[in-house]
Amino acid sequence: MVYFGRVLTAMVTPFSQDGSVDYAMAERLADHLVNHGSDGLVVCGTTGESPTLTWDEEYQLFQAVKQAVGGRAKVVAGTGSNSTHEAIEATQKASHLDLDGALQVVPYYNKPPQEGLYQHFRHIAEAVPDLPIMLYNIPGRTGCNLAVETVARLAEVDNILAIKEASGSLDQVSQIRCHTPADFLIYSGDDSLTLPMLSVGGCGVVSVASHLVGDHIQRMVQAYESGQVHQATEIHLKLLPLFKALFVTTNPVPVKAVLVKQGWNVGSVRLPLCPAGDDVLSLLDQVLQPLDLD
Image 1 (cartoon, rainbow, N blue to C red):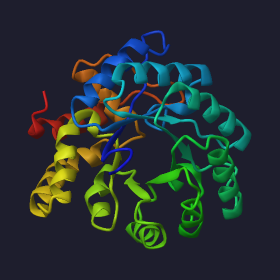
Image 2: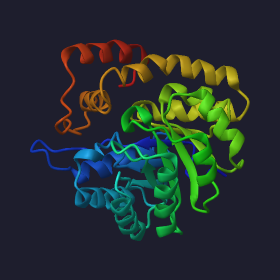
Image 3: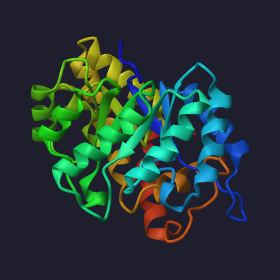
Image 4: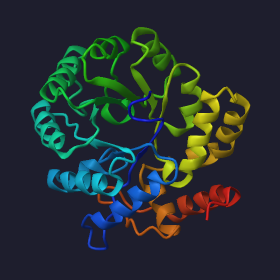
């Protein structure tokens, strides 16, 4: 059994025209995602624009999404911070909301040494011993890579169950698989690397594209797991242009633009992000047309 599921969507945060969080829309979107391929939802991660959300907004989003999906999907709260004390406080508060786990990003900007990273994550996990923890390594955003050796040490902590690996390195994923227990879960943090990572010991993906093609991604993963590698490859190659287009500019700008075009009133992004330009919109139209997603 894969505790968090195979396909988790890193949810966008819907905003109203005045820039406030639209919690009702978040509930509608969460329900839609679970009905279309998502085994779980990551709330207030990078795609959810966590840097521009207040903690109060985040707690309300956790509650709204949990209420919308109930026990039909896992709900994972993004409660990470580059302050260990703040991350502990936020995660402890979220742990009282009947959620299924917490996503803990590598501390950004302050670039801790590996021992500091180990102590950061260990202290958070030990503060919420009954809450499953997913580590999140994304050095392109944090400026700091969580080393294989540090992941291996953290995998020994009872409630650290998984990692979202977005280093872009299949070598690193392979090494993590070699040095962690078989039940330690490795998720791709990049849609385009989901299938390659499955082949070296990954179990699934924390996805952006699943907002649009969740059923397809779920079929790809299931096909691979059942030995239908050729079918999985066909799905991967069909979706690859979309995977790439969704990151042609900073995530979640493109995926929000597509959702709005499809009738989901998720609003725009908060500054310092800005809406997609005409060049991005044109590229997205070109990629989406052959997929016939409407």
